[in-house]
Length: 158
Figure 1 (tube, one colour):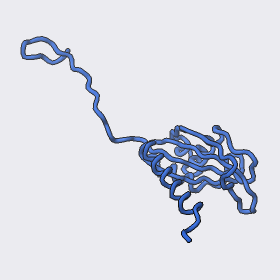
Figure 2 (figure 1 turned 120 degrees about the vertical axis):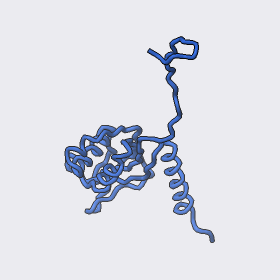
Figure 3 (figure 1 turned 90 degrees about the vertical axis):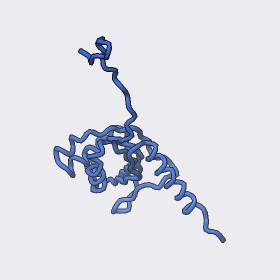
């Protein structure tokens, strides 16, 4: 039963929507490089490698951390291939993953400590950006890419 209005009629509460600017998610832009591979990993392999890294670093509890894989792009020609300890080259991919903000530190450390995939292939994961929203992640990574192009690819002033 709703609250009584001054004239005695029942009034049912109306649900109100409010804008909550707090976000409960953390977004990561991750580059995964498989050393010695001639083909970039698939989207399923990308997801499996992140889950494997969490399980290897943080045990069963780490492997159970829910991760959403939002985008995936295999790297093609023109990008710098990965180089292993023995000098062999490989190829990789870049993807965006989302997790709860409370698990962000665990995801970052697991990716930093990753050296092999679940099937033993040598790999390297680099966190290219981390943000609390996709817009911030895009801006951060876009600004970094622009700065890299301006500083590295453009010759210094003569």
